[in-house]
Each structure stands twice: as C-alpha cells, then as structure tokens.
Amino acid sequence: MLIGIPLVMAGIGGLLLMLSHVPVKVAVLLVLWGVFATAAPVGWGTWLAHTMGSDAEAGGGLQVAVIQLAIMTGAAVGGLVFDAFGWQVSFGIASLLLLGASLTAHLTWKDHGEAN
Image (cartoon, rainbow, N blue to C red; front, side, top):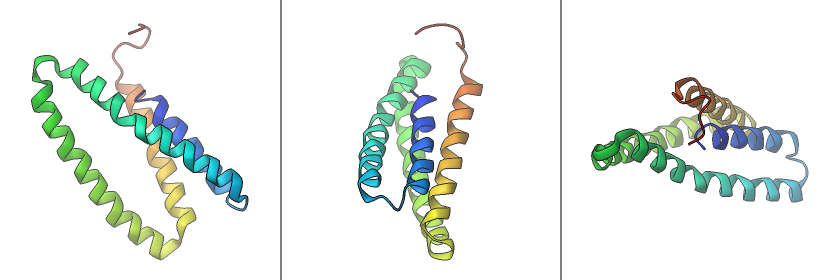
C-alpha cells in the first residue's frame, strides 16, 4: 500500500494535467484521488503497527506530528507555488513528490520477495 497508493496518485496527478480540459474526466479522476488518498492512512497505520510492534502507540504520536508538519508545509509551499506558477506546476510537483514517496517506500522495503 505504501508503494502503490502514491504511485497511483502520481498517475492520477499526471492524468489531471493531461485531461484538464475535459470536466467529466477531471471529476472522475478527483473522485479516484479521494478514494486513494483516504486509503493511505490505513497503509500508514498498518506499517506502523507492523514496524513498531509494542511501541506502536509512541510511534503513532510521532506519526501524527509528522503528518501535521507535512500538511502545514505542503499548504504553505503549495500555496506559494500555486500563486507564482499556477495549478499545473503545483500538480506536477505533487506528482513528482508522490513518485518519490513510492520509490522511497520501495527502496526501504525489507521483505521484497515475501508475501505479508
């Protein structure tokens, strides 16, 4: 989930850039964006519980703090980018960051060949 969700969302971001002139397709893509973005915290929680074991509660507090920092930073920087360069650049950067998140999750995955 931590690899697939950001990868799919990056693809949706790219499609939004390419299909921005077709309102019905944009609406469908935004619904899909919401579905995948809503599922992401389930993946994070599962990963945290699996990784932290008995320390999952302490890790959960740190995770909430990091998520809040990411939301704040993304809103501030994203707003500045949007104002300076427009929505297309904002979506492009978001797609690149999502690809980076997917790649990072893939590179740090310890159990590459094992099914969990």
